[in-house]
Image 1: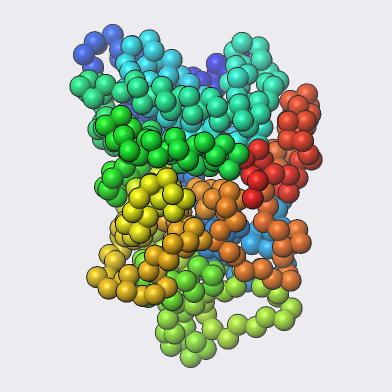
Image 2: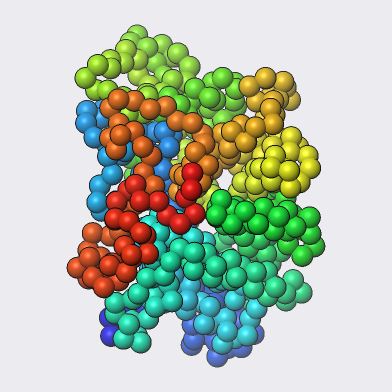
Length: 476
């Protein structure tokens, strides 16, 4: 009964979204007004996932990956790898909530025999399940979302099984798209009913996830190269304009997730590691992302950050460090789900590893696109700087990819766990012996609410429920 009530509330929310934003469905059959359609559910799903991801990038990824940190911070803190037990609760609950809605969207697409909405549902499902399993490891999948079938305590699936399933779903989605059949409902807020861009999103996500597990399945490198070399079958993003970037209009309900934008930079400083590289590169992204620092006399002194995990006992700062530009979270704004720049850097890595040609070209395309996605423009002489000229190393590609993944949910952290790059400074004030956490704890109520599933998860992990137990693909 509880599941039915939750579904009812989600459907009502979806309908309210449609009504309040004039997202009126274009119906060829008037009877559809009385039923759940895939078009009714799509926009709330997109916005819900994107807004949650943006908040987690700010609260978790920025701290772990030395993008920003709270200041002052006299003790503990995630930037020092002090990870709280309940830190993953929000994503666990939010992602499973939206997976329920995606499942209903998929069922509706089946009912209306609409291949494009079916493909979109499979793509969004893969996006969410990938983040869930990369955060925690084994998760409920085959028995998830089945409370109406009296499965109250779902079993857990191995991460290998989850990846096998979502990669198969992405392959199916790519085959389902019918470019000759327009999307029948109100314009979606991500790609505006452009079926070609949706298909490119599907295949770009496919590349991301194949690369994620290539350390344990090295045959994926050849698979990815084959996809890249067959763009007619596997089209992917080719420009920044094609990227999966949600344009937040500021018109209710498509508004900034920050109801108080000033909170985005309240008691927050940009990390020294993040700005020091941009300074060395004389990078045009600095004024877009950060404010200038000031000395004790309030004179501007350029872009300067605070070292992450600084020792509060011995460290004294005689300047006011850079913080975030608030325009990044005020209406209108952008939320990045998967940018073209990421695809370019995937191609650059494939070329660096010998599976494609023209690594330098892909690398430069990625750098330029990473600037474009935040609204900056690469200077004509940017690559004349020896520090940014392509030097043939994977480390350089992944350092620039780190900046391309700025504000993209947990992706910087996932990539660090896959590769160990970029090399982040360590300090004596770090917790966990200075070791980057490998996962988040399971939700705090899981051992009580689903004790059998929790024990199954621990057995599949082959370890304890702690931040240093590596997930299946993490062999770094």
